[in-house]
Image 1 (cartoon, protein in one colour):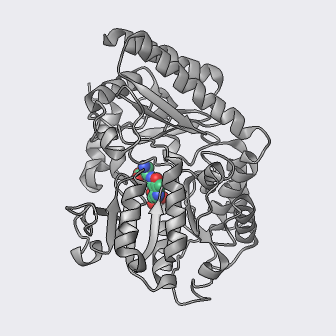
Image 2 (cartoon, rainbow, N blue to C red):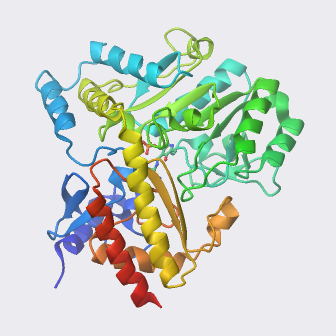
Image 3 (spheres, protein in one colour):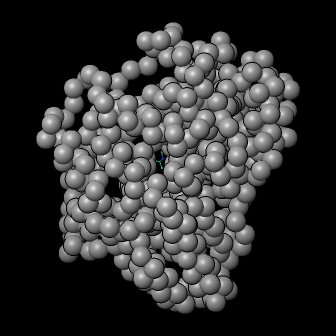
Length: 427
Ligand code: KE4
């Protein structure tokens, strides 16, 4: 009997490419039918067949308070009845800008946009405009949204210029992006030695979350900061995922590194479309209408989205929020590790704040190459067994997972109990 999820997926594919509005949702890397979700409350979501799941995707990070948080919903309702959008400045945008600059001391000024992609695309254009240089450095396995300069894969040699990693990206543009290895300070030093005066910016996920979770080696971020300062390149921390997810001051607060520009998204919108880029006043003063770097957006700073963001940020600032969130996330990791160890499975896991990584390999990976040698078929088996048991993990071995403040100890314990069953049947 065709489930409603299957019926909806067949119908969706008639008019939406792949049946989804973002590729990772299509379950292509794990196989099977995507779940069409109809509702979420707290840490749970419900699909079109009425099945409920403990959710560890949380819309890929924004829902740090869980689904349909009452204060966020109320803020959205109160904003919406006053009108959905004006295309004119509003006081709430000032409030959000002031709050972001207070929470992240590296921000003197910030510009709101509607997605993480817009934030990183704009930050890169700003860095190029401010330095007058073209070359951008990124790292293999890091994802910063889908603007052309970022859809680039490593050149043939480590220090050769990039090639398009997507159709439609001109080779002429891709060659202005150099793709290096994450957690390789020596590679970064070599790149600056060869190209230093041409480098406009380095953009990095200070904790990588798009090749599964990879923690930065301290020397990696420190070397990056020193080299950018020495050579006059702009250091961009892409904190779209890590911002207010790994701690109250983001990864920059956790590791004590001050970037020149920061990009934000996800949590700062609380589930509504909000992104932002910001940083040093002298650089941000180059943004139109103040300066020569153009950037714009019809719905940027949208009052309804800003209301959701403000309501979210005000709650996560409560004392003890992050200790509790990190503790709950660690409870999940510890439980899964114990379950795998009891069945002698090659499995590792780690968490940073409210995000986590699970790996079907003996040790946590520190590089892209190590991520790639994890057992992807084992992940697929785990993913579907846990989905059937009512626990919704990211449908890809190359994504981080997320816990919210709505996950209780017993919710986490139920996931661990079902994982124990899955791993027991495994051997
Ligand atoms: P958006 O344009 O999707 O709002 O943000 C792009 C982006 C930028 N920087 C980082 C560090 C990100 O993680 C993202 C988006 N993350 C993915 C999850 N891996 C979004 C999920 C999706 O593409 O559907």
